[in-house]
Amino acid sequence: MFELIDFIIVRPITNILFVIYGFVGDFGLAIILFTVLVKICLWPLVKRQLHQTRLMRKIQPQLAEIKKNCNGNRQLESLQMMDLYKRNNIKPFRSMLTIFIQLPIFIALYTAVRVMVQPTLSDNLDKRAYGFVREIDSVNEVIELQKPYLAYQETVQNIRNDSNLSEEEKTQKINDTPVSTYDFHPKLFNLLDLDARPGFGSVNAFIILLFAVASAFSQYWVSRQQLPSKKSQKSKSFRQIMKEAADGKEPDQTELNAVMSGQMSKMMPIMMFLIMINLPGALVFYYFISNIMTGIQQKYILGKKTEEMEISADKKIIRELNKIEEGQVVKEKRDGAKITKITAKSKKRGHRK
Image (cartoon, rainbow, N blue to C red):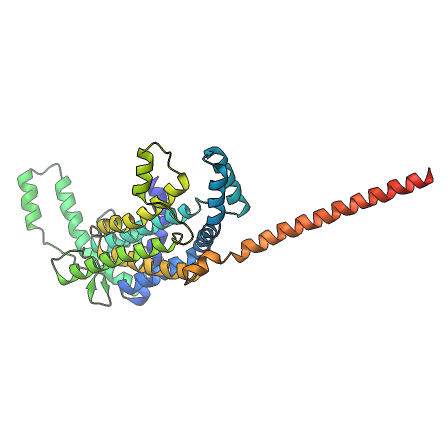
């Protein structure tokens, strides 16, 4: 299954990155351009997701009204909420699709870094790249650098697998084999090693650590943009909800969801930072650039001012609602016309009689 996913999804994505690197000759710049390309390709999907966010902000007063009118009847409240979502064309789980699409991109980027920095006999740049990609000069240079190292690895592997040799003879033969090393570091603007991991051991590692911190803050910025403002949703704190639950009051699901979303916006950056400090710098750099571009996209769709986000409606949805209202008016007119005709016919028949 994983081999199929690798062949259909991961390998094509890695080759796109290799092609970009082949033309620009700088791995960090290739990541920036690759991120821009990914965001452009995902823009229609992201735009729909952000429109869903705007609509969710828009219907907050209606959700509050439903909660008030249902008087604690959870089943009725749930039915009315689903009806409200349907009427406003809101699909709460649509945002999950974007996350699932991002996952293979992240895996592909990790694979690209691995085959360039730590090639193996089973997975290296020569095997991973398509034929036409191997012909690109920058890519071909890395492949040629890997060949002596891979030849040495193959020789060592053959010696170890030779059943006719004793362990001492194998060790001796390996020691007598000329060692071939491979030292390639993908860089950002030929300065920053993007295979370094975040830390304090070197200048490169420390700069990557700063990118990891910046990634965490940018994740917080992106998450907070999607939350309803405090003006539009006066939700209780988590402590208040827990206190009421301890007193025997059943927590309101809408308030609980709002509180959990707020908590996740704080926890997610911390979780991502802990993940980032264990990844190569190239992935940390990609995540940072991706967050910045996501934040810009969200600003464009959701609006620069929070007040504008709360009162503005989605034009597409307004058009849909107007169509529905116009359809109802037309239907009422038609029904009225039918009734008038029927009444007129009845009167004519009465006169004839």
